[in-house]
Length: 553
Ligand code: ADA
Image (tube, helix red, strand yellow):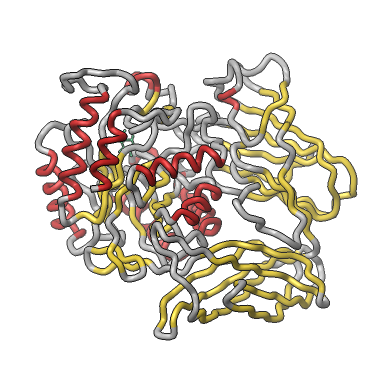
C-alpha cells in the first residue's frame, strides 16, 4: 500500500507483488541474478553495500487495457519499460511518478525498471553528500486499471471564514480518449457535505474542476490533537462510477504574523528533530512499522515537529504525522550546493521538478505547515540568491496557503533573509565553533535582523553535536563521547528555548545516518553522521533522556 488508507474504491488498484528478479549492470555488482524485495535498497544485499551503478528489476504482470504504474520512489534515476518498450524515465529519488501503458492486450507482460544511483554531471541534486543516495525501488509500486479518463490529483485548501471553515477544492481529470466526453464529478466529505458538477472532457487533455464548500460543523486539526477528514472525488459517466480518488485532509490554517507562526491563530513553538529517511537495516526504504517507531520515540521525547531533511518524504510517513498531529517541515531536495554546483545546467530544472512534484503530491497533508528548499546552498552570492528567489516564487505559485523558508548555512553574508516568510538558520555552537552558545545564537539573530529579516519569525533549523553510540568519557571532555554530546546539547537547547526571538528549534538529528563514501568518509567516523540522539538502529544514546527532560520541561 502506498498510503495508510484506501485511495481508491472504484479504480482497481493493487500493489505490485514484492518479489522481483534483480540483476546489476556495472562493475562491483552481482555475479548472477537474484530475487529481491521491493520496496528495498540494494545496499542491504550481500556484497552490494557500496555498489554504485545500475540495477534492473523485472516482474511478469498480468494486465491489459489502460494501465497506470505508479512508482512511489526509485533511487535515483529510473527508466521504466514494458515488454522492452520504454514507457518513461524519471530523475530524483524522493517523489512519485507514473508510467502509463494504453490499450494493452490482456495477458502477461514484463515490467522492467532500471534504477541508477551513479553520480554524474547530469545529476545536480544527488551528489556525494552527508547522507546516502541509495539504489533501488525504494517506495511501493501500484498497478492501476484506468478507463477513458482518470482523476490525476486533488487539492483541498481549508480556510477559516466568518461563516466557519471553508474548503476550496480543485480536482484534475485527464482524458485518455480521442473524443470529447461528458462526465459528472461527485465530491463527498463524509459527514460534512456532498457536491456534484458536470465536467466536459476534451480529448487527451487535463481539465481542472473547482468548487468551494462551507463546513460550519468541521472540527479543526491541531498539533497533537489531529482530526482528519476523508474526501472522495468520484467520476461518473452515464450515472456509472468510472474512476475515483480518495484523500485525507484537516481543517487548519497557517499564518505568519510579525515574528510569530500561527496555526489556527495560536502561536507555535516548535520543538523537534531533523530526520533523514535512513535506518540501519533498510536504508531509505523504511517499513511503516519503523516509521511509526520513529514518531513514537519523537512523541516520547516531547517533540511537536519534524523536518524532512533534505528531500520530500514517503507519503506514508506524512500520513502518520497527519494522524498523530506532528507538524512537518517538508523540503524539496538539495543540500550544501556551492554556487558552482548551482550553476550545473540541470540544477534549476531538477529543483523545479522536485519542488513541483513535492507540493502537488503532498499538498493535502495537514501536518505539513511549511515548505522548505535549498538547505545550505549559496545564499551569499548574487547568483545563488537569485536561485533561492526563484524557488520561493515557485513554491508560492504552487501553494499560497503555506509559508516558505530555507535552512541557511551558519556564515555571514546571507542575501535572502528578506525573501522567505520565515527565516531559518543552522548553527553548531560548541561543535564546529567555540564560543558561548547563547551569545552565538543572539549574534545570528542580530545579523538576520540587520540584513532583511527584521520582524520575521526565525527557526533554528539545525543545532546539535555528535556522539558515537557506546563511546564514553565519564569526564565528558572528549568529542564523540555520549557525555560530551549531552553537555553541548544541554547548552544549545537551554539557550535556544529561552531566546524569545526564536519560533522553535529542530535538533540535528534524530538518528545517525549513513553518509556517501565518496568525499565524506574521512570527515565522518564509521561513514555515519553521528549526531543522532539514537543510532541508526534507534538505540538511545545518553542524550535521549536529556532531550526528553529539556523538551518536556
Ligand atoms: C548541516 C547540514 C546537515 C549536516 C549537518 C552536520 O547543517 O544541513 O545536512 O551535514 O550540517 O552534521 O554538520
